[in-house]
Length: 310
Image (cartoon, rainbow, N blue to C red; front, side, top):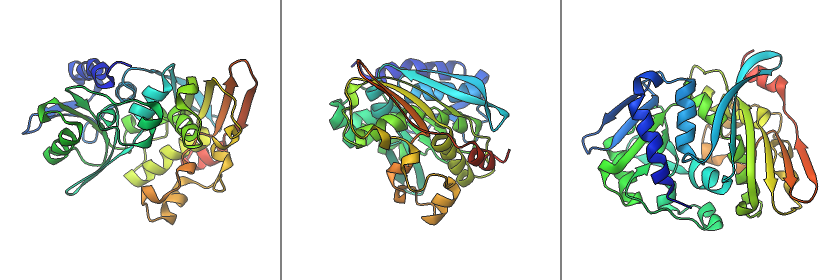
């Protein structure tokens, strides 16, 4: 696979060239790292969210919106498809980098993770990137600081002026859109965690509703996770049969039917205290090439209606 960070540069350039049209802002820090505000202080929007999701998947996924319904109400949904799920979703899109630098806290996703490649999925895929530029999407209430850029530069072994940090808050239009694009990643990650070879996942298509923008970051985190766990639908084409396909969906957990606001409150909003099994799509179809087609799970529109305050 070609460098994920190299492929992402073209998308970062597009964001810089069309910043005004996307309602985003870009600026250089004192160390010459570049921050792209997709939805922290900048407004952002649907198109910004779609481009950010492309950046997070290193340009290896097709991402678009469509209109559908949630509990009878017209709602936008994000659709994502990729023929490179192991690289686009596990090695790039997954929010696997916990950023804690001085007083700054955030979650990092995107191809810069592949330059560090210390998470277990990189061993499973057998991939580590090598490139002179690093792009890390940062989900946080605050814009990344110079210290954050220095931290990313050190771990990715690039110069600070070669670091690009697209940033967004969960409680933004951009946040709702880009998180809705994660249904496929949740399914592939669950399969990988269950012991399935991620390289045997050949193709993935998924959709999830775009959660209404909440009034606080905590409420937005709960809503966007509800959108995936109770509205996310995924179709996978895989190479081999597996006896644990039924565990990929959120209906397989004991907490299915519990709003994420209650789940987060039960652990005092400590994100990493929540079992990873809860982060799963609502419904999956798994098409085994030359074999059976399995269907598991179901959506929960009543819970979504409550979460979205419809």
